[in-house]
Amino acid sequence: MWIALLGTPFLLAALWFLLKKINEKYFILSLTYRVRTQDGSPLESKVVVMPGKTRFGNNLDILNFTPASVFNFVRESTAKAKGENYLWYFLFAPMYNVVRAEEAEEIFQSTKLITKNVVYELIRPFLGDGLLISTDQKWHSRRKALTPAFHFNVLQSFLAIFKEECNKLIKVLDKSVDGELDLNQVIPQFTLNNICETALGVKLDDMSEGNEYRKAIHAIEEVLIQRVCNPLMYYNWYFFLYGDYRKHSQMLRIVHDFSSKIIQKKRELFKQKQRGEVDEFGKKQRYAMLDTLLAAEAEGQIDHQGICDEVNTFMFEGYDTTSTCLIFTLLLLALHEDVQQRCYEELENLPEDSDEISVFQFNELVYLECVIKESLRMYPSVPFIGRQCVEECVVNGMVMPKDAQISIHIYDVMRDPRHFPKPNEFKPERFLPENTVNRHPFAFVPFSAGQRNCIGQKFAILEMKVLLAAVIRNFKLLPSTQIEDLTFENGIVLRTQENIKVKLVKRSKE
Ligand code: HEM
Image 1 (cartoon, rainbow, N blue to C red):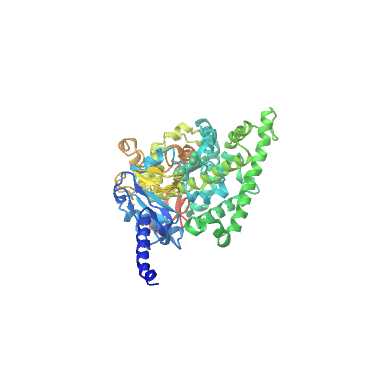
Image 2: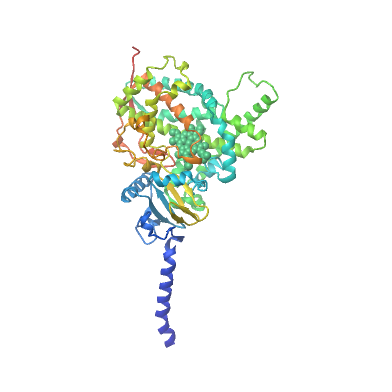
């Protein structure tokens, strides 16, 4: 017994020593391997290891998060790291946060780091294995099949749709002249109508289910935001027990049924067309992205579920992203009268009848494009993107364990004062060709970059130019909401707690 008693401290010391040794490579209290440098130098020489509030890494730093506190937490972390990239340790995996263009470049350019991280799993019930989330061979073949749907000639055919929707919107805006206009009330409707008609080939306003669909998309996004902010909600069992699981399922059913029904109907028309028959209305149908998918289906490249996933992906990616950018751009124009005036003068060169303005002429609106870019730089619709290491891999000279998460904070990359002096000032001139010559090629990345960049970026720029040109030609925008009034939130898309408002004054035709 004496021997056993005397041996206990020795055993405890040995255990302590062993655990300490293990903890050097394996972060025991976070149940994950540590990141190490490839050349054996101290980790701190490559990245700031962000101290957690407790010994459990950063796990307990993020409890009770709200969408606004997530936004602030990320910004504060970037500030604490003094503009360097930084590392968090969460349960089961470290997260490497990239805020510098120089290191983001390697990730964007990597042909291996194309798998999305855990945040995207939350959207999977909505988007399935669509282009945004899928990976490897499936992603490669789908991206190849879908690229023609964004060809220049296709964009040209969408221009008429953008203009029609724009004319409808201008009539709505006419009713707000000399009063306040709530941009969050009108702009999302414009972009959702556009994406619905270009992707599916149907007018949402003509469909009895249109309103229900719109509301369901909103509700799904709200649930998503709730889940993004609470790490416990990432676990399906927790979401099932404590989250809005039932509401989510109900809304998903509405959205999925809607697209599935249209796909079935379009498939019939597609087959009729292949047989050389005229459609049921005896008129020529406009091209929709869905036609490219149906052609791929006819060649056995994709099945019904695959088509549904891609259509839902387009609807999701093409709707909120463009409306967010439009809302911020209109706000910035209202707040910067000189910029608005310069845009107006540029637009004076266009034909008076908007029906006559071609894609080429929209492309030539260089200053308006600078305004959109500067707006995207300051308020990127997608504030971060994520990747994960599917196996142990070397990133920026660091060995990341399997399942390590990577977040590229586009928001912070594009506010780096080394690439954008006075980053918090709105200066569209930064994007004039002569001012971009020496800029780092990955400093401005609102549409991501590399293989997994945004397939819809040209579509988005054209759609936004059509609307901005029409608004600026018809109205003078005056400020109502100020930037300081806004509380920013990190969802999947950047948003604000408050609706954004401007005032409109009708321009008289001189
Ligand atoms: C201002 C508007 C837009 C912005 C800022 C934007 C931004 C982005 C970003 C940052 C990504 C990369 C996401 C990631 O890696 O997680 C992306 C991907 C994607 N975007 Fe966009 N987007 C916009 C408009 C659109 C539109 C209009 C469409 C479709 C019509 C679209 C379709 C897609 C698709 C399908 C992907 C996935 C591409 C892939 O992984 O191959 N986006 N977008």
